[in-house]
Image (tube, rainbow, N blue to C red; front, side, top):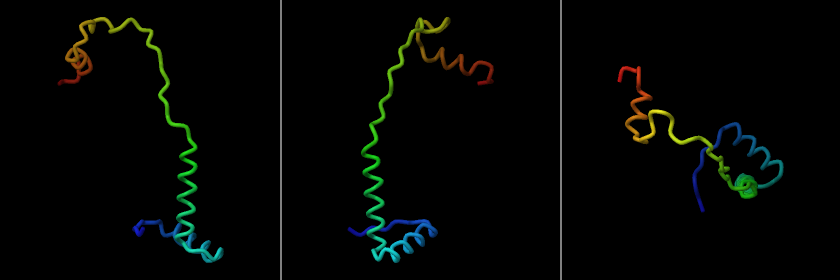
Length: 81
């Protein structure tokens, strides 16, 4: 499949030089690099958010009713809003 990608000029020149030295195409180097990166990333374990227990007593004083408007008002208090 054909596609167009932008490569930093310095990286492209280094890639061309290596391709010439190894007598392979730039495409071969790009595919090899992409395969390597994909394989490395597939080895990584999936991110898992650890469970953090909440041991507080619920809402703080003045917020027992749980209304967002009260929380928002407290955040904005003294800010001239």
